[in-house]
Length: 374
Image (cartoon, rainbow, N blue to C red; front, side):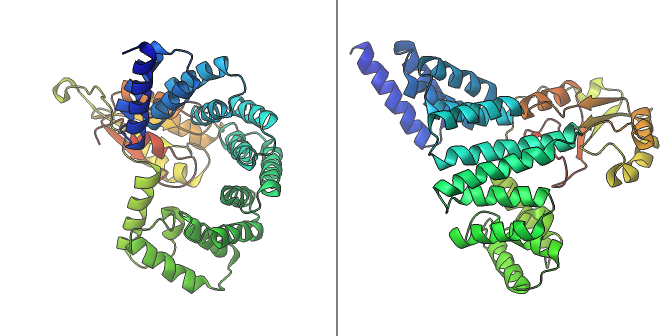
């Protein structure tokens, strides 16, 4: 059998494994293909997809760049690269990549929609993590990108979702409710769409059809459907069990467990229990106000306390007290999920506490990787 025939066989086996969601086996077959056909752009793109599905984000980005070097106008390769850059929190690079895609395919609605997503995420990053005032401009640019997408394809659901997200971030709740209503008009069972609309109705004190929508979500959640996000549902859930089911469904969809090989300390070798508090609000904010006394009263002879910060230093008195009451502050705000997980693992945290839940500058993706035993 010739090298070409072997390469084809490995490639199609890789595609079959990819369809079966056996991403590790798929990756292996594509790597074998590239040994025989190193310039195969379709193989590189599918390899990047397999790597991305395994959360090998850095590898997927490098593979996408290899494909682009061979085919500088390959939209699929650029799209995968942009997705990786977003997860790496390289928002300016992702912005540039999305603009490149549009320069190649200006009439593809999804390209404009993806640009809107990046601009929205960049706005949130600048507003929250960098604590600067340029977010409004980013949000306006995101809306323009979504408008461009909808001018090409008026029923593009993700563009309407994006508009709703921007309006919610800028507290334009009437416009957000209209956008999410449009989402449900186009796609009545859009994942978490009913919950998004319900949250806007709560913000507006709009009780029209409120009871009907609440009952629909209640029934959906009980049936295992992706109807609402837990943060919004907690305000109206009729039972603790409904809220628990909502959270379970949301986590399974958004943050499935990604347990890797993490080296743990031998419990007998440690003198203190290491506790990590992860939050985006170690500043003048309600969470910090409630927490600071707890931190100050830990028994430092028994516990080693780490503040794992996904926010910023506002130089407030609360921040000063927090810093003074912990062993150290680990800044993960600019780290992607993989690097943030590594930073936590290096501290050999025994108990990792999520102070955000589903609110604020959370890092649920990091918790999904289980960087601590508890």
